[in-house]
Structure formats: C-alpha cells, structure tokens
Image (cartoon, rainbow, N blue to C red):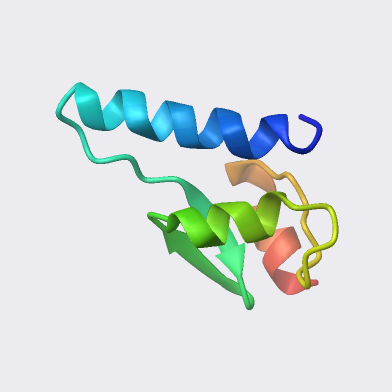
Length: 69
C-alpha cells in the first residue's frame, strides 16, 4: 500500500481492534529481530518511504529468509 495510506490504514485497524476489546499486535522486523506489537512511532517509521530501515513486506513462510539477509 502506498505512503501515507499504509500508515493511516495500520493506525485505523489498530484503533478498531482496541475498540473491540482486543490488543492489536502488528508484527515487524526491526534491527533483525521480530517485534510483536509495534508502537505508533515504529509503524510510522517502517511505513515512511525515507525510513532508515530496509522495509520488505513478507509472510510467515519467508521470515527465515528475510531474517537471514
């Protein structure tokens, strides 16, 4: 999803989840480690096109490969 809709959508989904009484657990890989439950700042950083991280969309199947890079 293109920027800035990617960040807006992620924040809206987390807000909807919280309103339904659940804890959202957005997952990302930050500094080579899997992080479950990203903060708003982490979501914004990963979603911004000029972030300092190499951002790659991946699936569970490809996590070992992505982590090895």
